Length: 225
Image (cartoon, rainbow, N blue to C red; front, side):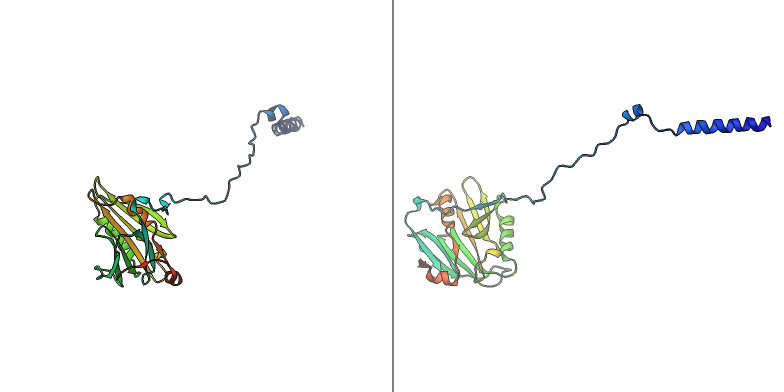
């Protein structure tokens, strides 16, 4: 009987101890507990950023006075117009295709052998072939930029030393005229040239493609064939 009482005493004592281990935390202990605070993330705009192509510029539309009186020339077959000095005698002739080119190719001589326009029927990737030619053959390596003239997008190449400069404007295929022609405008100058680079650049800024209706009504001197 004493043994049974003794066992009951220890059983009751064990229950008291175990219940003490599971008692709620006191308010003083809960004050020392660090609870993570939920924060609201700042609002981030979902609108896409506006990207301005740094290499693209709009060519000026002013022709400098040092060129003297100007005239508008037009090609009713190739559908383009341009302004040049009145004294220039501009001619166009069909030339043999360079190796690797297809379709019709025309050369418009603006001024001697310094300034001319190549006009060609679009086929395959001829515009890319011109770009590759300037990158691979011009020395020093040309600087490249993108120029928009009268809505026409050109890739511009310029190779320059102290006394010599070579420049080419290659029309992108997407900017070819409605008859399916694209152009390359090219010039070269040196210390003995009669004109300056700014003169030729100002004339190029007047180059424009016309559609069938516009070229018929365009006022200008027809280029001699």
